[in-house]
Image (tube, rainbow, N blue to C red; front, side, top):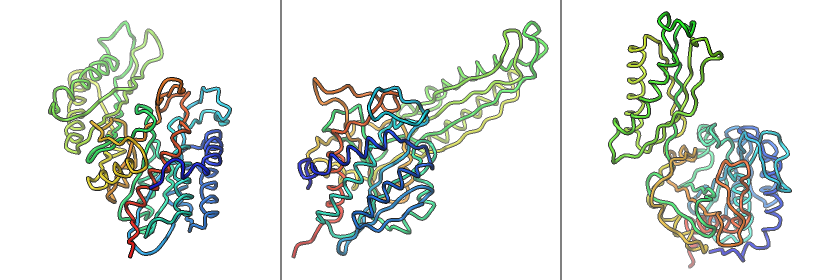
Length: 392
């Protein structure tokens, strides 16, 4: 199994590549430059390369002998947010920032491709999957619908995400749910509008919306079994433009996170019921749009075990995650199609003197380059454990 020293010669070029990707971030389904760099790098290794999978996705195929097949996935897109760091490789694109570390994920998977292409300590086929549009746009779903696993048959699929909450050198995952399902709700409360000094003449959309927000925040506490885990958050309420006018409508937006489809069903039904009740009591009209855009990310038990064993083999301190996270991940769509596992790779400060680690999606966030050899080692170890060489 590879250790950091085995891939040390790869690191200078991969750091430079990662910094270049960070400085030139691209949004969902527009990762044309990034995809081109990935495809070119894979071709230089002699891999079979397929572009345009699920939009701007790239798949590299490395075959060595007969055996099973495994898919290793990295995401490539950036976030629609401004970077506020003073890094030499800070984003050159206004309003676009690699604030989640996908530049690092891409560099690590390319490093794993380079290492596996030269070491060949496996028997079978490795599919290197570079996915677009993870940040809320369902790039994994697009790749699956584009025939990812029909065109590139895989017995299992694996991915990782850098995790600033864990120290550098640690890794965690677990069987079962590891990341939450993500739902979005949009509610429009319609009154008629009128003079603020004559509220008796018009249904008050502001008051109805306020009552609705209050009641929405009781759903998890009073409609969901306390043994279940769920979060409902109202994130936007907007209505009105003047101090003396009752607005004709108010918009409410929020998110629901959960791990069990039955819990999702109960929360959606309760939300619609609460909205109808407020509408009836306030004489307003309430329209509800509820979208389940990412399912829960659920690891299969055997592959979660493989992910932890591979982490230990490449020198990481591997632990079973004590609980799943309420953040979401569209790798869930790949796990619905194939067995697999998703790993959190620590990239936080390892000790005194290390640079501080900003949280994911922070305007000053930057991927920790010290995690590059660890992620490369994990990807390689997964492939070698899934596709063992049978010595005669």
